[in-house]
Amino acid sequence: MSQQRDQLGGGTDSLHELRLFLKSLSPGRVPAEARSTIEGHLSSCWDQLNCNNDEGMRGDKLEQRMKDVRWEPPRLIFNILRHPGMAKGLTGTGKRQEWVVDVKDGTARVARTGWYQLFPTVDEEGCDKKGWYDP
Image (cartoon, rainbow, N blue to C red; front, side, top):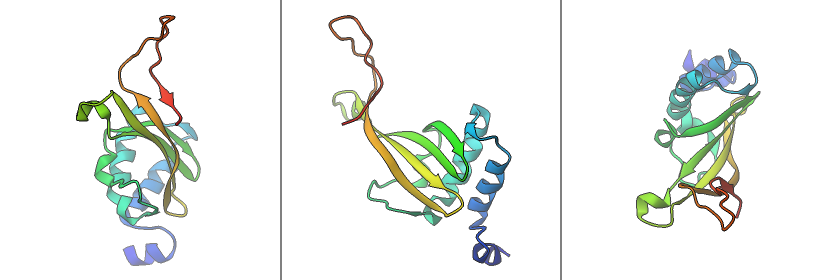
């Protein structure tokens, strides 16, 4: 049955489950209570997706780290903070990536990369500068 689903475009069981779950959601921002289910399905099927993995992304890195998750059928879009500099004792910045997963085609790609300031910095005018920075 699983092989038959693969041939019909259903994918692996986890990818199929992810597709079914996403169909139950309205397009737009994913509710917080649905995010853990999506993270579980996506992390389970990550190795089955066709993606350029130059970034070294693995499914186990997704759980509890996906932010700003959006469902724009057939694409699931999310941000993830990678390699935070604070953990390495560096400057308090981390690499932030926006990923696009096309669940219909079974593909994943990095759409945008930038830097994120992990703790607030204040400029000379007292403005908080925490946020997304494009290199």
